[in-house]
Structure formats: C-alpha cells, structure tokens
Length: 436
Image (cartoon, rainbow, N blue to C red):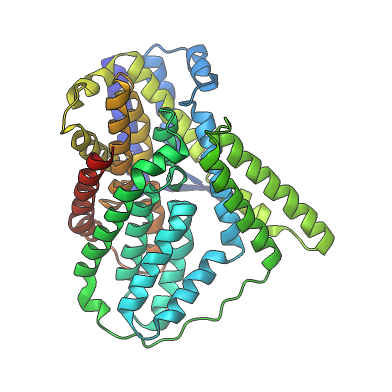
C-alpha cells in the first residue's frame, strides 16, 4: 500500500514538472505532450505495486455505471468538437472583434464587454475552447490597439473558469463529478446557476479593482475587419450546439444519457456537413481540423488517473482522506470540500483532483455526498486561476501568451489567485450553502 502511494505521489510530481519544464517532445516534426505519457507509465507501476490485475481494471472501465470514465470522455470530447467546429469557422474571433468595435476608445467598456462575451460563450461551450480561441485574439488586438493585454487576458481566463460552473458541459471536472453521482443536467443548473452568477460578479469586481488604473487609459488603435465566410456551415454548427444543449437538459426526463446525446450530435454534425459540402462542392476542412484539434490526449490521461485512484481506493488510501474531510453532516462540510478541492487542484491539477475526490466522496451518504460534489466542482473551477498548475487550460494559456512575447510570471498568476480566486471561492461556497 505504501509503495503504491509513493509511486502515485511521484507520478503526480513528475506530471507537474513535465507541464512546467518540458511540456512537449518532438518526434519527426510532431509534438507530443509529455504529461499523459508520464501518468500512463505511473499508472502501470502503481497498478503493479498495488497488486491490481488487468481484469479488475478492465471490468471497472467497462461497467455500466455513471462513473464510467469512457462515457465521461465521450461526452467531453464530443462537446469540445462542437465548439472547435465553430472556432474553425471564426465564430469566436468574429464575436470578439464585434466586442472590440463597440468599445470605441473606452478600455473599461472593452473590459466589461469582453468579460460578458467570454462568460456567455463559456456557459454554452467549454472554458478550454474559449481560452484557446480568445487568447491569441486578445494578444493581437492589444498590440494593434496599443494597450496592455494583461487586464484582458486575466479577465478572459477568470471569466472562462468562473462561468464554466454554470452548466455540466462547461468543464470536464463538472462532467466527471456530476455524472459520477447521477446529477442530472437540470438538477445541476438548479443548484449552480445562482452561485455562478454571484461568483462571476465578485470576480469581475476584484479584477476591476486590480486593473482600474490601466483601464482608465484610452484605446488608440483600430480593430480588424473580420467576416465569417461560410455562413451555411456556421448555421449548421450553431444549430447542432443549440439542439445538443436542449437535449442534454431534458435527457434525464426521456431517459437518455448525456454521452449519447453529445455523441449523436457530433455524428449528425459530420454527416450534415459532409452532405452540405458535397452539394455546394466545397471542402469540409473544418471537420478535419476539429478532429485534429480535439483533446485526444485526455483519453490516456484520464484513464490513467482513473487507474491510479482505483488502486489507491482498493488499498484503502482514499478512505483516510474521507475520514480527514469528515463523514458526518456539518455546516463546515461545504467549505472543507470546496477549499480542499481548490488546494488539491493546484497540487495535482483539477482533472486528477476530480477523479480523486470522486473516490473520497463515495463512502458518504447521498445528502452529504451531493454537498461535497458541488463544493468540489466549485473548487475545481475556481482553483484553475489560483496558479497555472490548477488546470490544463492554465498551461495552454501561459504557453500561448509566452509565444506572443508577453511577460506573465508565476508570481503574477499567483497575485490574481490571491486577489480574485480566494474571495470568489469564499463567496461562492457561502451562496452554495444557501442553495443546496
């Protein structure tokens, strides 16, 4: 048991180091992320040390349960492909440019409009996609407008990782924790919508207090003229995203699992796009790019982390953490799991944290488990903007702005975390306690 625990800790440490210092390796002009390779190798050694055979792991991966990681991965990747498809058509960049035009010369107006735009889009798509789409655009327009990009990059990142709490589909951590405990789309919204709105307002106010001096300066540059070329494809993409979201909401009432809804939406998107391209005699390049950009590396990463947690749980290690956080009903339970998940997300990343906390919560009664799950979801989202390790989105965000020669040190990230993340999660957990 001790050896398995030590190997699991080493694996997590090496994963963090790989993300910070050697995130990718290049083989024949192809870049491969290293973090999932390390976790995959670590999972093999942890399974051997924990005396967990392949048949036990396979049975857990294939069992028909809500905690099945394969179903969760299908749901997340399907929703991501729907968002990437729209991004390939220039939809997000187009909206961002409209925002810039409406701001005129006011930086505060631009800051507010950008925050609102990112927030709304994140609710219905995914925080990772919005960050990948908007970050390069912010770097470009800030340079053209001759203004500091830091307030806008911070606003984008904070908004994406705060408003991602609103719906299950906003973050893979939401998907994992909520579906693991049979929380339906509608039940999730009933609990999380008010805490998310209030948290979003608090986060914005904290950001404004941080950057109010920079935002008092005027914009001198001019925005680009961006147009969407393939409007037919855009209508197809938006229609599929809208219909998919509606069916995710009513899925529990018609007894259809969310992964089936999202997977069906992607299959339909591909079929209709191909047929449309055939009739219009155009190349469906956005489909190829959507598949290329999909986060396939999350499959071995999540499955490997699932195996590690499975072994630790089998050896009774997660029970110690359950005892530490408490099994009894307590007014402090939400804060324990909320702050606990917040801290763990910044130690081992929020996706592994979600897998771990799912196992920690399992021994709890239904009422207590639900509170712990929602509190952990809050920690997994808001924890993303405490440090760059908190989420994969933080790593991607940091690498993008570095490629644009924008200096943003670890201490700068931590400053946002202390000033924005801590007040935001505290208020969110208080409000969550009132609504759950």
